[in-house]
Image 1 (tube, rainbow, N blue to C red):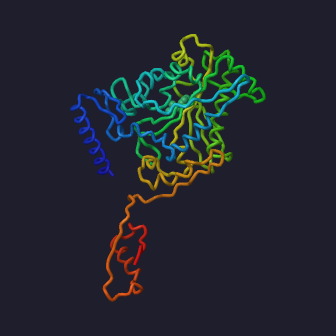
Image 2 (image 1 turned 90 degrees about the vertical axis):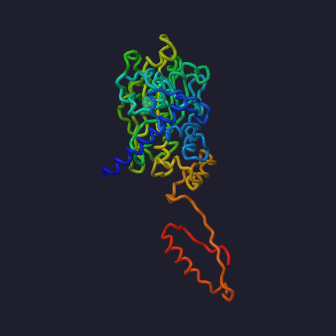
Image 3 (image 1 turned 120 degrees about the vertical axis):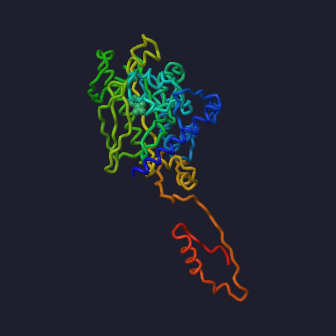
Length: 395
Ligand code: PHE
């Protein structure tokens, strides 16, 4: 056991060594496949295997399970929602660079300076000012401040996020998140009041000081957020799903929640969410924004896709093996209303490899005397169970 650990560490060491030497040769610059130039400094701690994942954009591949689930989520949020005087939908951003400033990833989101998430043991640093985003929340403030004329405070962001993490079947240092933000202006809040007047609003605690006189509005926003998220989960998994909302804690929301779903008796934590802190809206819109209130959520795509398609290991999502991707191609063209997720069929860990073998039968032998089973036996003896199937092509 100890030996195994030791050898894994020494492999990592040597990777870092080889990589840092390679970097210093090129003036601390590294070119990503999409042409982005990274200027590194001593804070740089991203191994090559992680850099190679940047730009893969698995969530934009229509035949990939992550792309299939993403398309469904996007379609759900693209539908119009009505508020007395008009309607809105969520604008989708799926192509934002995963390299973000520490201001966007942490400072703007009220992460305290000693928050463990900032540590280079948890986060990949490109240089002392830039990281590989650890969550899609990193775009909330900049999208609100620069793009509100397009999305009016209602958008989803989908992308790859990076966290240094343990090794097992449900953790991988790169995964994909969907972020949702929905900002209600003051007039919209009064429309919400009408929309939910028949629904007894839920009681909320941990209301921010700025909202203390607006408790009803916070309740409406939380009600709306929970309905949107539950609606999405039902859309993905059907109506036999149970929800449990648990108090959560994030530096940028208050109140905060986590959602667990219970599906076929199994419990799964799927999402973090809450009411964005007023100080975050101030960063985006200035100090005197019009008392708008926004909800936000974030969840991992892999977790949902693993349940939806019965995929047992998160590493499959990075497989280039056509036997993996081709299993889901029919779902790629499914109409959203009659979507039946294809269940993953395990595949051999060995790469596909087709071999033809030919030989001559001696001059007098009749083809019919040829003993197939003897040939199969020879193959089985030599290659044991590695041979998946053998067939006579022609005689
Ligand atoms: N960014 C959080 C995470 O990655 C999720 C989240 C998003 C929580 C938005 C609240 C609001 O865990």
